[in-house]
Length: 337
Picture (tube, rainbow, N blue to C red):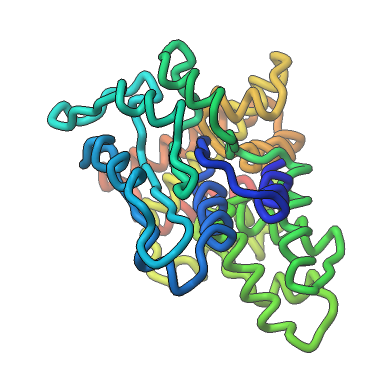
């Protein structure tokens, strides 16, 4: 887990070269922050922290900086963002990178510089010589989507780092409301710990009270009330969304998207796919797959087909003027809730 890599950074002498890659950009940014805190004092960061974007600047410029002795300090960090030359992707043709110079640097990096490759890609091109070299000679930290267990542990550890505890139900509710989005989860935990400054435990009631519900989360709750035949609550969420000036067509499209996800998860699950395999096939966060999996229990494939048909019909009737937008959605909710 990436938290282990963070502990290693704090306890041990920083390496000369780091390769940070993966789709979870928030975890990559946090890793850079932790490296910065260990390598540079606050007063040195303005002078000895440089950032180069490989889609805008040649790698030569970053290497020249990395080879220059730090100004008013013992160490410096050179952050190389978007190193697309480590992948099969094509970058901007106008930027020429001297890969041979980079290879020479990696083999003999100066002792006063920490060179960090910030690669927000799920996969690197293992066939490339430079990719193999950097992976061999650097400290590699991968930050792809966390599993359910890792996500739960990460949230718990973050809470504990602030001196707070939380019940399993409170953490699960927090994960549900943030849908596993690490940046939002981090922000909401900071909000909760600030609110509960005098309390030792973060409770589920605090989570329900303070954590903001996104439009997507309201749609999830709307579907949940619908499948459990809680008509009044389903309609109340719908009317609250209208009061907040949410466009009915947008609500309809999000309902369609969520029900389509539930249908796809059900089909793939019946075909023997695991949660992470489904997430990879559908290109969605594993936690969204987990939530959709729970909703599949309430439907047969035939029922989901019928629901998707009715949503498509409602969309057609609205766009052709046969039904008013609000009425079309009310009739859908009344039929299924």
